[in-house]
Amino acid sequence: MPELPEMETYRQQLTRLIIGVPITGVDVTRPKSLNVDPEEFAGKLIGNRIVRIERRAKHLLFHLATGEILLLHLMLGGWMFFGTQEEKPDRTIQVDIHLGNNSLSFIGLRLGYLHLHTPEVTHKLLQKLGPEPFELNLTQFRSVLRSKRGNLKVTFVDQTFLSGIGNCYSDEICFEAGLLPLRKVPSLTDNEQLQLYQAMQALLREAIAVGGYMEEPLFVGDRLTGQYNPKCRVYDRKDEPCLRCGSPIIQTEVSSRKCFYCAHCQK
Image (cartoon, rainbow, N blue to C red):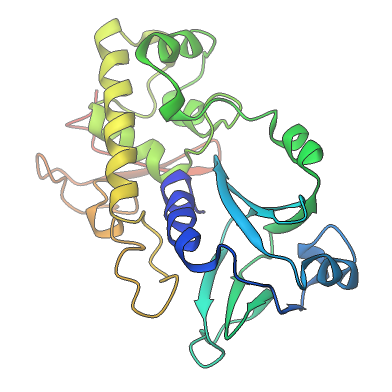
């Protein structure tokens, strides 16, 4: 599932590709991906323009010139592609927004959605999300940690605690901090809280800088998207040697989620 770095990569790249370009057509093959009738959806978009793209946690908000917002959550398996008809991947596309000779294609939206809302409704829907990692200084981070009693893995993927972190980066952050994802939050010392905060900030910034871990390119010739994938320290590296000590990476399951760690380097 795309997390904060992947959605921020999409936001940055799409901002330079589609802002201000007139929407000339819309194709919908899966009406369930929308919250309004496909004809109404097309009527609202055709002739309109996307004037700004905002990211909130794992969501993208496409602000339209007429004031409405397209709220996107890709969920598990969702991704996007921008290009001409000839360049499109041979995949089922649930929603296609045409922008002149190119289209922004939404792929794998079986669980994800692209909903049309007013700004007021959008704000209300996102109110339940916790603060983003980059919004917190160390003192604020310590404060939100005090209310948590579970382990680090469950805590980090809780979007009401911190928004934008999921399975991949929760494990990567814990490894960077030298802490087991199974550690209970109240057991952390002040110094370990500091390690965790610094690891979270540094690792997320690194992942954004190299385009996140999702490998599907956004457009033909895209050399940024997915460049964090080969840099993953523990995530999806079961039985591979730890990059620090050479011990095999362990995979377990925590609250029905995959979890990866090094039992030697993380305490």
